[in-house]
Image (tube, rainbow, N blue to C red; front, side, top):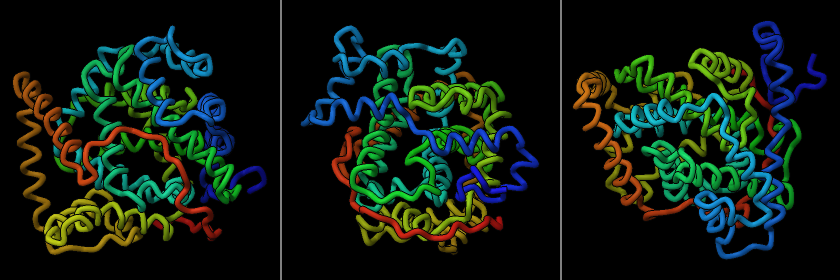
Length: 389
């Protein structure tokens, strides 16, 4: 039964019954990475001083002036798929911005934490040390990326979202290179930052965020939801995710997420440490941050569900009573947001909110940068546990 399937895929019999065609394809994609980005990182290994990202910014604005090493990656980048509708993508970005602080809460307390919960998928992050070693900088980089790909016009040719997506793609490739050269990797995890895990990340930023917003009372229209899925489909394409792994509709995204949920093992100790580092970030900067910390735990437990929150070691708090108040407030904001004038004001407020987040991160304003070293060299092999949630 398990021959040809990586051991990180749990509940294999059930997966083969429910997803008979998808399961073997995913076993393949777990072992595949991103050759175009990996080739560019290898070809520019001797570049120093931020040259690669500087040249990438220039190339996005003027492809004809790009160094020859960029050729294959830029050819893929500037081949816009026929399904791309930039008006719909713009609408998806405006939807996200219109959620302003609520979108930020759900992104952190649901989407990002669910990414940490994957015991095989979290290993590159653990080895790189990019969360535990500099949590506020890592979160600022994530905020920079999310804002850049959602800003108006940012995903059109030459836009800031194109540069941001390519930089993240190259960061992934750089981490893979360092793991190959300096770190210890176990085959049962698949390739570092593989196609399956990149697909799952797209689902976390897209579908999982939508579900979290709805859980708190912010209900997108069906058009907004589908356009937001398209935005992340295109971002996924720019990040190097294989086309067959990019959902075209919310229904397809839900099917892929159901597969991930079924075949992903329970959170491990690394997942709990990463989650704690994220939730305790504010307390690490200010010992007076206990009330916000407790509220963060409360919101995370609400958005993740009690079983997942327990598995991740997220503390219970006495602020559970605030959730109905939060929901009532969010519903009122959503009512205003859905009006024409309210939508425009909400988008403008969202832009100001994300600009404020980026300016006021404890690490200071940051840009996306290539990591220079692994902070850990090895991770003990631990048995993968079946999920019981």
